[in-house]
Length: 297
Image (cartoon, rainbow, N blue to C red):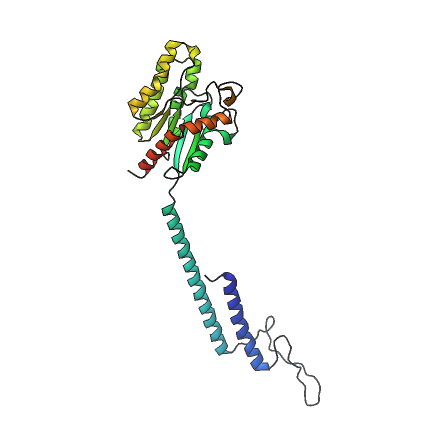
């Protein structure tokens, strides 16, 4: 490839050569020196007469030299165009090859409540961010993955259903559903929670999106009847809709003082690390299904 600097140097060389040589041939005076003043027979210096013009007269270039100048500039221009075309072709080929060999990242949305949102944590320690990093470090996914944080603190299953359409756009490849913790803590009728999650999964399935349902367990202090009715919701809906299922989102973290914040309910960074480590195999299954869907398999 011919650089702009080289082209300019070639043009300068040709122009300089053509302009300098006629000057030497016509005057015999090296460039940069003025011709000796004309002297008359009586020895007196006479001023050279110049024809009238607007501005300073330019140097004359012989017709043969002018033709050489035009031919030289044309040659350099053709070389420059050839080099530029070659560079453009090479760049286009490189971009095409890169786009063919590097697939676009899969987009996974984590739809949840404060446990997903990262309540009380720096953004870098939230579940979606840590999960995305774990997927990248593991290297077992078929292509890069982006995990979108669609967690809203305080949301119930009904709230998650209400914002489903705008939280999960048309460009999404898969969804992790983590809802129900606030339903359990507030003692919401399990039938309401079930109805909301059932409808949410039905709509995601109608769109053909792979889903990982993260289960939740009611705390023991809610009473045995409530706990039994609530805990059954998640495995039964996962079976009904044939989606991937992770039984308990807080497995290994719930009630562990060293892994939770002072409120005893929201995981700290160490707790998020445990959650990510344990749920990762299921998320990899989700990514595999999302990749197959994207590839039309």
